[in-house]
Image (tube, rainbow, N blue to C red; front, side, top):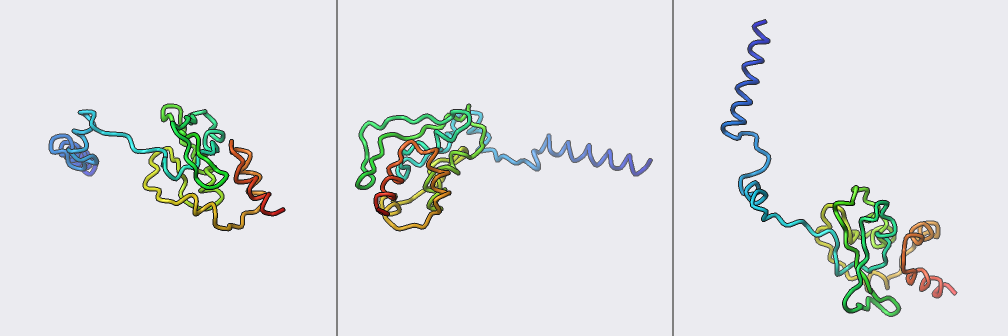
Length: 164
């Protein structure tokens, strides 16, 4: 009984320390104030420059949380491949399944960082035109699986033309 009472007192003391002195606080005061004042900005979900605008992420999304938005001016990534749209991720619809990231061809086919991520895409510095020009061995079954989600099959057509 004495041990039970000591455990109880220790719990009370620990909780009072947490409440009164804010010990074991996970969020620092600066971040807490930024949150309360509404000064926290959401992180980027799409790396706009290296994204090739293929629409694979939008097509793979099970909740239609990704909308492809037309660019003001098309961007030519390389001969035969022009980026005309970019994905916009609507976080309220997103279920964090990561299909968008996993089906991004830069990640799925080339093993580079995906250009879309439900939490934070981070810094993606990649020269896409250089990446698409270099030869890469990708199995046909992997290409077939990924290509079903791509809106623009320019990469696949170019590969077939080169083989012929």
